Image 1: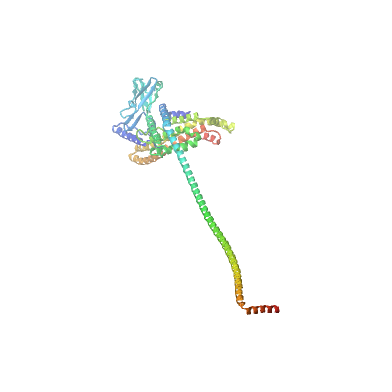
Image 2: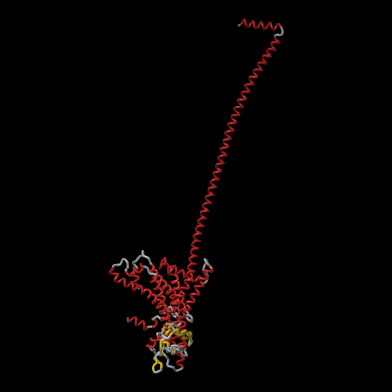
Amino acid sequence: MNTFLLASDIPLVMPEFGLMIWMLITFVIVLLLLRRYAWKPILKMIKTRETSIEESLRGAEKARDEIKELYANNERIINEARVERDKLIKDSNDAKETIISEAKTKAKTEADRIVTSARETINNEKMAAITELKNQVAALSIEIAEKILKEHLSNDENQKALVNNYVKDINLN
Amino acid sequence: MFQRNFFPTLVFILCLFSANKSFSEDTIPKKPFNAGELILHHVQDAHSWHITGHTSVPLPMIVKTDKGIECFSSSVFWNKEHEPTEIYTSPSSGYDFFLNHEHLKVAKKENGEFVKGEEGYEEDEEATKAAKILDLSMTKNVFSLLFGALIMCWIFLSVAKMYKKRPGQGTKGLQSLIEPLIMFVRDDVAKPSIGKKSDKFLPFLLTVFFFIWINNLLGMIPFMPGGANLTGSVSITMVLALLTFVITMVNTNAHYWRHVFAMPGVPIGVLIILTPIEILGVFIKPFVLMVRLFANITAGHIIALAFFSLIFIFGEMSTGAAFGVSVVSVIFTVFMFFMELLVAFLQAYVFTLLSAMYFGGAVEEGHHAEAHHPETAAAH
């Protein structure tokens, strides 16, 4: 109680009703005015900007990820292409070799066949030629012999000698 | 918690000094220097605004008595030196008004003569009571209040306009100064103290923060329209604290009152002691808000004024001592001016933070660590 009595003795700590009324009216008007025309729009703008910044950052992050992915994709595609190319080259090389070796084998076989058949033909021809020759030689021989005989036996003496000869042979036999 | 209007103080004291000189020249008995009176006069409200020397600006008086409302200039109370020492007989109500330490009173009349005591005219307490005086005058603090309100409206409406003009873009000019403060109140004061529902209280918290800060700073401007001890006036801090109290009460939930009347998990024996403390705490919290701001700002004034008074206390002994002391006083006051810049912000922050914490307590939902509640109540 004593404290309160003391407080009322010091005008400094006694609230003035008039000033309180002025303060209440002024403060409430300022509060309502600023709430409507300052705080709400400002806070809204700040929030909007924060959201947009956040979204932009997220978008940038996403774009970066996408680019990374894109790069990875490109790399993959290039690698795949390289592998494909290598494979193609290898395949074509293989094919070339196969073709060449096949061709070689074929050529060799063909050559062999040709050689063999040629040899056969030659042989046959040779044999035929030999036979022909033999036949001709025989024919010639006969002809010659015929001629010789004809000539030899054109006179009687010879004919007699021959017959004698034959007879002699027969005798001897 | 220090110095606010040391320049007007300096000017005033210099005026006193010159007044003393002129008195001695006129062979009027020299009044001894009264530091206490000077300091109290300067931290309190006034009905006129002292500019320099014997020049003051009269302020309008709005007085409601049992005979109606009347308005007149405060200059009716002035003597030649602009000191409010005269009696004004109102033509409309017929009351013989005078200012007794800036309080409007009815003068005592005996045998057709006004009774004059040591400190001027004497009050007729019965007549004052019968007149039911309600002083709604535009005092120095009211003018400072309106000026501060205008400045606030100008700053924040123009900042809001800048936001509208440049949506989604970076801050510019005044915006760059204000936005970090708004963000500070929103993110570091309101959100941690209140939580999810902080948006609802933000307009009040922002207004209170900037009101206190801007008016604290205005109080540091040493000439009109600054220099009034507005935030060091208990009437102002009481209204602010009452608003915090009313908003807290309007927003309380069942959880809040359960914690006040029956703290969960506390035995009945302890509750008998705890509940009265909690109930008192509901009222002590805003009371503390009121006292803290008022005391901090007023204490700053008193200290600074005391430093200046030292010069004149020593001056009464010898002029040399006064010069010596003045060097120390000025150094200390400059130091305190910078302290006051910090305190101006700090007190705005503390008031806003505590208001936010009280709001947070009112809207808090359960599922919370409850151990700290008795402590906070006891701490107050």
